Length: 398
Image 1: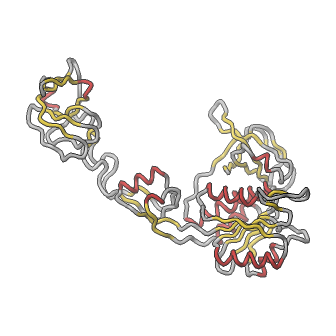
Image 2 (image 1 turned 30 degrees about the vertical axis):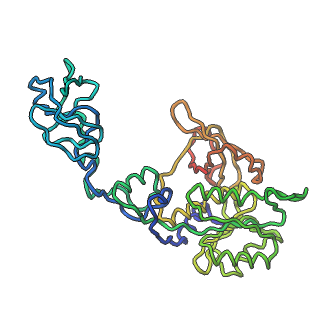
Image 3 (image 1 turned 180 degrees about the vertical axis):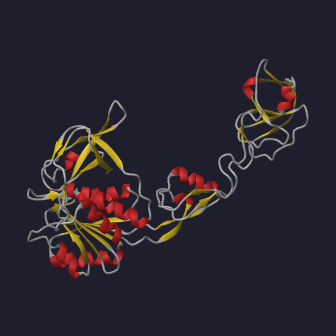
């Protein structure tokens, strides 16, 4: 069997890069940027006033003048006026600094009467007070956003400030999530005592959408080889990524690996030295489709989806790797099997500000209800059996 690291590397190496497309700015949030975004102008593009009040010459004030006749009023968006000697201009936050003015006195520190602004006694000011200097944030031509990042709402503001109404992003993959099994019944449908509710498919679709992959659809196929072959072939025709759940172990009704082989999907590996999720299967379709066949047990399916499918989609989208995250075990853990252990955890904060991982042990890999409230899982190395409280472990959030 492959180690978890070997399995992950095999998947990432096999993933083809996604195509790109230009999307409207209002549709860009959450997408993976595939172009450089550079500043259209200096920011701010002019000396920007940051306080309502009056604009004046600091030299006039510094020479003892405290009463300034009001020459005019200038609001944000107005062309910059030229200040006359000994005068002041009423000014609004966001306005361009008038030519000849180099200081702002806030409105709270002046008295306005008979078109004269009088600065309050003993008020002190400074040259270029309340002036946001032109280009002090960044200069024209500065690269503000680089390819390979997921666009946030704050990034949308940056893109808009650069004058771009469209932006080039990675195209979303078409994903089909397929639940297999005769025993599965969808929520809302009548159910017999010997059947179980179908939960893996909806949960994995939700997980993928949470990570930004919204072009997903779910299907359920019973364990009949001919039907499996027909329906999986149909999905291969339209999807870039197939994620199957169930039918991948060694039982007589586990037809998925055989069916995938008959459809021309080349197996890259089957089984990984981990718990949960040991029976996982991965291959590539005849037209470059990535095919993940995950175990049917819910905890196994969700862990494998997060551990392997999500990073594979990130790689295909060109998303830059995030720095690894770690947490300290809140209590001792013992795991004797020679397997990498993916242990669900809840996160708590220690008094020193450290992130602590509280283990949540599931009652077999079918106990998906135990996952509620967990933040993700930690990875415990197969080379160890005893993991004392306080030791660090790699954390992956759901």
